[in-house]
Image 1: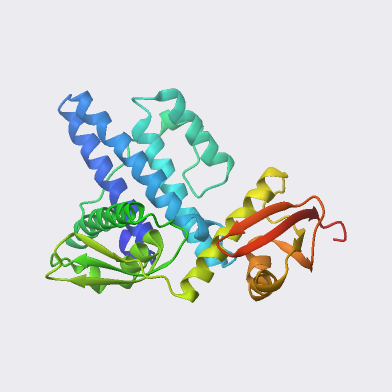
Image 2: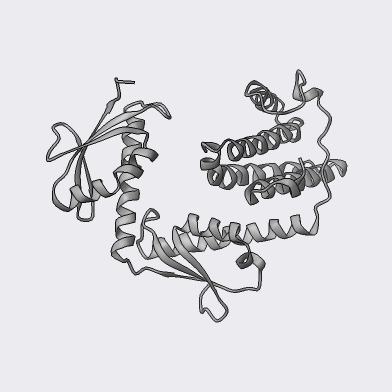
Length: 299
């Protein structure tokens, strides 16, 4: 797996982190420092789960086969190598993880057990790899500060905001569109601006235009419908019919977002009526709806 061949910045980052992990654990084991050998594993698992996997969910579920395969193959490779690194410390879990990867038919070397595999080799990280690791660390700090600023301003994360201003420290983040997108998506802002004379680390523009309010209400609706699907036991991709009770501005709101909501929430049809008996109420600002989900039996 060559880092330079990976087109997605998250894939390149997690593979660079993996090689960094293998290097650190190998060095500590060779020096018989077991405490130093185990600590980086927990940090890596945290990076993998709370950043890489969460940021890659849409790619893993993507209908674009090339995008989906690249994400899954990267994940399979990383988990396989991670199971080898964990094997001396957590032998039973490492074996379980390795067997799970084999069962999912990821492209890995076929062996009966992780304990019959060779210790993983690691690449010498290039200047590009080291820069990427540094920049991603800075990205995550900016995101953390941005989310903290949202919480202080009492702004829900699903409510899009116009912009986030960030104190310019001379890093090359602002030159990378991919890294820019990570900040925008995580903090849920339309734009990120780097300012040299900013008094604080970050500053949010909390002015809500009608368009931003509408988008925030729509995102709340998507979350609500997805939660309804989950509570009623709908499987991923299983089509449902959504009945909506709405009048006036609320009716216009659902009509405006009908097509996109159907696509995201796997809805075969949305039936809009003045009222729906026995449905669940949804309220977001001035939008008031009654929603009811039913299985599509006409497939």
